[in-house]
Length: 123
Image 1 (cartoon, helix red, strand yellow):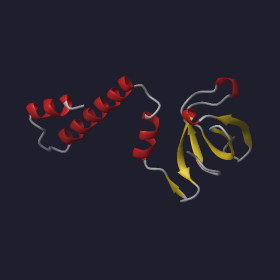
Image 2 (image 1 turned 90 degrees about the vertical axis):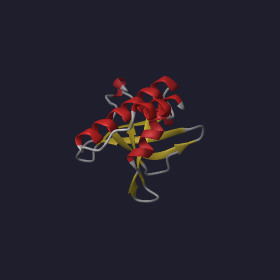
Image 3 (image 1 turned 120 degrees about the horizontal axis):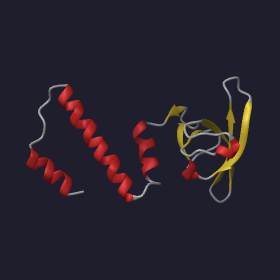
């Protein structure tokens, strides 16, 4: 869960407020019941909007407590936590595709088809 002054990134559009998925804001208040007040600003630092969000509407991308960016793998895991299992499988298939493509580009040997079949049957 986010803490005060963490930077979050929207995972959903909020068209009635002019906010789009991918926009980043700062947690400025933690409300009881899993609601977080987030401030969105423009490039000049001027406030665009304040609104309360639920955790399924964003992912934390920077932690104020550690003064560090959240790793990509942690962001992916946070997104996956809110997806149905079928969508998780699609993400896994796409990750496999990227892995194989990278191996081919680097000239690495690919796994034997039988080994790949065993890997996918265990999931």
